[in-house]
Image (cartoon, rainbow over all chains, first blue to last red; front, side):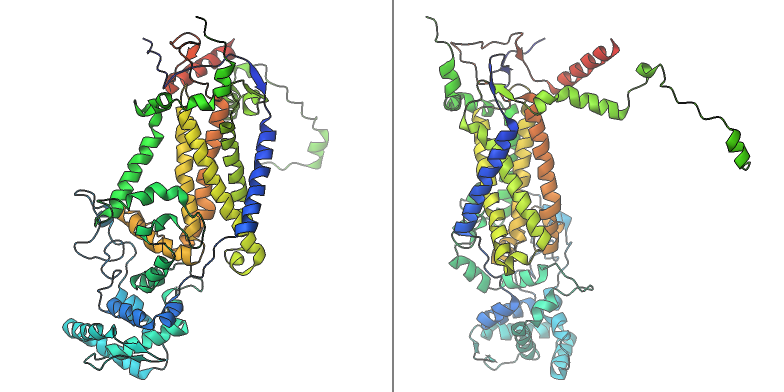
Amino acid sequence: MSKRFNPDRDVAEWHGPAIRYDLLKEVTVGFAVVLVLALVFAVVFSSPDESAITLQSWSKAAPVDFVQTAITELDGTSASATYGAPYNHTPGTGQQLGPISIERAIGVHIPLDTSRAFVIDPLETLPRQPALTSAIRQYKSAPAKQQTAWTSAYEKVVGKATFNGALHVAPGSYGPVAPMMTALLGMARSGALDGALTKTPQLYGTDYTKPLLFIADGTYMGNVAQSRNLLGNQWGMMNETGQYPGQAWLWLYTLWYQVPPMNSSSNGDVEVWAIMMGLTVLLALVPFIPGLRSIPRWTRIYRLIWRRHYRSLPPVSS
Amino acid sequence: MSAVTKADTAVRAPAPEVEPSSDVANWSPTWTGRLRSAGLRRLPPEKLLPDSQPAYVQSAVYLFGALTLSAFGVVVLSGMVLAIEGANWWHVSNAGLFVNSIHLWGTELFFFFMVLHLWGKFFMAAWRGRRRATWITGVLAFVVSIATAFTGYLSQQNFDSEWISTQAKDGINATGAGAFWNVLNFGQMLLWHVVLLPLVVAVFVGIHVLLVRRRGVVPPFALAARGATGWSDTTEREDLTKDEAAEATSTEEVASK
């Protein structure tokens, strides 16, 4: 049984005249044209290369913001400390699509305890600091309730701290926390903290997960990004620094972050991904989807593309 | 095992030349032979490297595919130069910055031409007449290209990489993929960018181009008043399974004659 001819699926193959064509010449000329265009753009516009923010540059530019963030890493209240999978076990976290949370199902694969990884472990690498060593020992051996009392007290006042070569925090009952924070700030400003957070058992290191998470927990990087129109609500996903096109092809992905409910949903990321995956599958399967595959015939834009061909056809006999 | 003496070899007669077997025609086909036959059957040289095209191929829209391929070539070549000198080179050298700029603008041109190519082919309904696989491999090449460019942005070692990776991690983590594909891990992203993903793009682009050569350029829609609109003996309908089976049978028949 033969199927009926469907103009959106089937085609009358061409048995008409041919024209001269040189594939090799087309590819060669095409390559030359694109190369010249790329060279011209490269000469005229160059490419952006704004230096990355380091723990050192952050702590020098905004020392109070650094310490405000560091105390939340120590007491486990920062965004990274409470992120959930894949970094740590935090009840109630993990984006979900309906009842499903793939993030939670897969679980912790990049374990991260910010208190140890961002504060205590780096401080313990500092040599010949008996007062600091004693402070760390006091903090580690204190009951959790006492630790929280110290960090909470420090957290309440550190926002009003000042820095003029040294950190000045209003006096209070911070126990060992104050000298630990002062030492961590000094370590960051010297550049030693950047090295400590990328340290591996080998000499070489290429994983920047820890410093990037620490930096992202502060407000400094976000402020810099905002000044360069890179925030999510500024279509930042597809922008880059300077007046460059960026990843313009991500416009549709970025669009979904601007519209409700994704722009305010706690599951916004997974919702946007689900939409984009669905649209990608639709695009790939256009040839099989009735209606969708008829759009080219309905819009008749093909008449424009093949206008020379249609003009060359013999006139309709009346 | 007996020892062979000089005397033995001296008196031994020369080995006769091996004559070709008379029943070569009856040999069962080898894998190599089958691959060659299938390749030649599906892509004879005149299809693979054509010097003529149907007369309807007269539009600037047809150039976008070749321009996309050309831009891909520029991106790969400039990327290779960057790879030769290493990841830090372009941050500390004017020549490196220039090559990186070519890489960046080559990428922008690649996507620009690819999107025009995609829309052009969409409005030509280029999947008609056994060309669905061509469309699908093109879409796959587009999607993997986006991932390749994304990992490039993550591998720049500058503020853009830093900001994009810390923001994108939430999206990737939300899908569960972040547990294995860590956008904050520079080493992992760089290797995906320079090895794995370009290889996948090249494979999809390669299959896509071979399918274009095999199936040819899709003919225009027939105009109702001027040409055939109905299914007839001169039209072809897509059924990949049946088509492949029919081609294989006809080849076997030819071979057996």
